Structures are given as C-alpha cells and as structure tokens.
Image 1 (tube, rainbow, N blue to C red):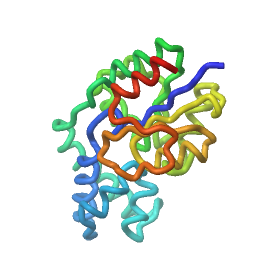
Image 2 (cartoon, rainbow, N blue to C red):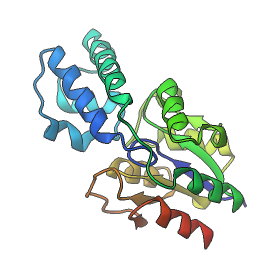
Image 3 (cartoon, rainbow, N blue to C red):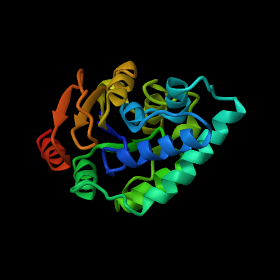
Length: 211
C-alpha cells in the first residue's frame, strides 16, 4: 500500500509563525481587542475559525469575524516579503516522492496564500495536491483537513504520517487515525504526543531515506 505524507506549511516548510502572530495582533487591535503577541503566538497553527474564538467572544458568522480575518490578511501581506523557507524544503519533498510516498498539503490557511507560500518554498510544482481551510468546516486541531487529504490521496490513515510543527497538528493527526512527526522549526516547544520529533527538515529527509 502506498504510504502518504501530509504536509503542513507554516512553521514546517516556511518560517512564518511569528509573522502570522504579529498579523493577528494587528488585526485584533484594529477591531478594538487587545491581546498581546505572547497570547496569540501559542495559537498559531489553528485556523481563524478556531483561533478567533479563543481570543475574543467573536464566532464565525459574526460580521466582526470577517473584519478580523480581512485585517489579518492585510497585515500578513505586509509581512510576506520577510518570509523565508526552511533549509532543505525542496529536497525533503523530492526525497519523499522518490521513495514512493504520496504527498499532500493540508493547511489551515487560505488556498491562495498556501499557493504563494509553496511558491516561496520552491515546491509548488511538486505539490499539486492541496487541502486548505476552504475545503472544510473546521480547521486544526479538528481532523477535517487531514481526513479530506487522506481521501484525496486514497490513503489508509494507518499508512499515513502528518509532518507539522504544533500540538494542533499532533492532535488533528491522531484524531484522524494517523501518526504525526513534529519538526522543531516553528518555535514551538509543546510537542508532547508526537510519534517522532526532528530538529529540522534535513533530519526528516534522512528518516525518509531509511523508511
């Protein structure tokens, strides 16, 4: 049976977690909310449908929710030029595919931004199979994204791994019946429960070479 690798983007392939947190802080401030960076940063990895209610009383469907999401998008655009991919991103994906893994992207972000981040990481051409927030009702840590990705890949979750960088990736993967490998690149230290933890993408690639 073909093995499947489901990839997160932010904090896993691209160094963007701090930028997302700064963008959210700015968006919250524009709407009269006052969370600090230290409050928002641990929540990066959730989609807006999960993150906003954690910080405010605003729920999806509230007009203020869309205003917050739009503000975050504008603020993140200002951050985009400073983003960089992590070392070894393309080599990782090339190795996985050469070793026969089916590779699918699953991100809590929007599809357009996901495409731009994958272009930035120089892997967009290698990763046409993608699942984003628009494909599901609930983002990570709920398992919806990964369940759709597994279906897209025609994969058995018992033969699949998630590669992410947050506790939300770990939780979502386990809810979907998958294993999760976590990489210590996104600045998160709470990776308890991961089935494997790697320091960087070079170490992940070495694992794939011998799996």
